[in-house]
Picture (cartoon, rainbow, N blue to C red):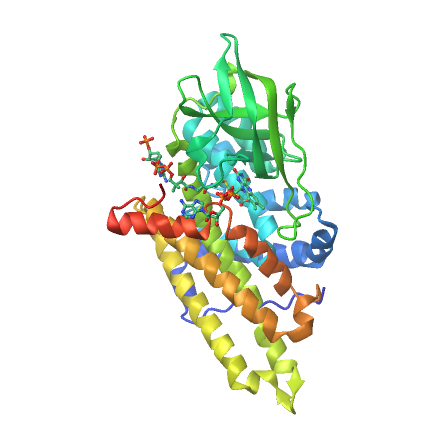
Length: 392
Ligand code: TGC
Ligand code: FAD
């Protein structure tokens, strides 16, 4: 891959809305991505390997539990800083941001929010430092967009729970030390369980042949009469609202993250278009290419502002699920459109690993699907504004 020459676009001086801590956190993440991610990421994707050696660096820049209080090992940052870290990571690669999203919002968050003090003390510091990596099991082979239908279940055996079922499409599962697993109890109520690697009957086969998110490990979680100790049940919340609450936090991170991917595609296409000569002049001088670039910077700028505003609302505890959903949907769609246009602007070079665009484009095909598909998010907005449920 060519040298990372990334320059972040800030067309409407959004920086003036950030405080010193936000900028410091962002610069640390940006520098780290340039130094550690950019030089190796193309190779990891070609080999379809998650670069595990990045885990300690992710912990060092505060990407594991940015908003979890410092007493549990988190970085104790606000929601804007959390978002900016996700933006910088996904500027590098969606798979690296995925690993941080899952660890922070889908593993540390439910333990912090729904766990007891003993569980917080036992797991959060190790997850924050990267000594332990987690994954989140909600999706099942027959229940993706409709997790309420899940069949994974556990029975109360008095001195332990007995867990059976399977989860599919689980980020980080092949190497995770623990899994937050959502399963139904005998009353059909959804609860969260912390399942630990090494428990008998628990396996995590890897899913191969992905054309997308190749630098992120994806797999299954299979439970065959797994004995889960009673102290591993998350006691403080049940029902589908528990996993959906975690998704609010992760979807918010994705909204920021996809701005990073879009910025990288725009910045790459802009630089290339100024250097590439056809018909005797830089292709940046042709109206059709300028139209693409002008639309890209406009859409990035609009996304930056709704996402910053969402961060402010989250800091104030006022952001709704529907607002987060709209922002995730809009920003992934924006990034995917920009990636496709940017790829065309590079002509044949756009399909090579010399430039990051095709990799972002392929990654974003997963991002538009996970954490709720584009269609599901349209229906969430539809329900919110009309009061009519079109899911069922
Ligand atoms: P619905 O009836 O709307 O709600 C069921 C219960 O949940 C409550 N609730 C919430 N609670 C807290 N926070 C939220 N955001 C909540 N949203 C809803 C709700 O009040 C209700 O409570 P109760 O007490 O009455 O039971 O549920 P539904 O079955 O109609 O489903 C709605 C729908 C379709 C929007 C939801 O199922 C959905 O979002 N589906 C999409 C599935 C999805 O996003 N899966 C993601 C899997 S994880 C993943 O992809 C990780 S990728 C990570 C990476 O690599 O980065
Ligand atoms: P389906 O639900 O079968 O949807 C298929 C199509 O039907 C979609 O286009 C959808 O929009 C549409 N559709 C479904 N219902 C409706 C409706 N009511 N109205 C209109 N259209 C509808 N899950 C986890 O739990 N943990 C993870 O860590 C995780 N990581 C992932 C990593 C990757 C790389 C991928 C690809 C997925 C991951 N997922 C994870 C799963 C992801 O959340 C699901 O793929 C997603 O929720 C969609 O479910 P599905 O694939 O079963 O599609």
